[in-house]
Image (tube, rainbow, N blue to C red):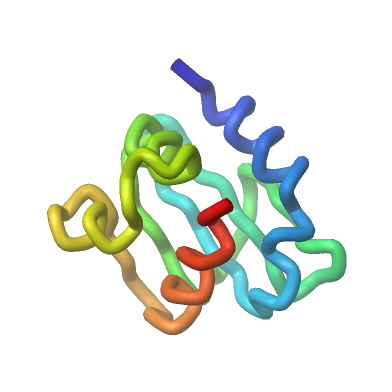
Length: 101
């Protein structure tokens, strides 16, 4: 099982994947914490602190890991309630294509 620190490190290693996002996204992992991706900076910054996200994605850490490994499709996660999106849906759509390898 991964920790939020491991997920943050993996996202930082792939920070350039978020270039062109031009938005702040909060990945809300509930009691496990949150990770903010600031795609408005170059290179994009990724940290566990942030403010005013354009889009918030609420998902369990386990489901996020499945999503990032390609074991869970973003659309299926959304349709089954495993992924909840609030804020700018267009950013979420752009992000789903960036998360897929």
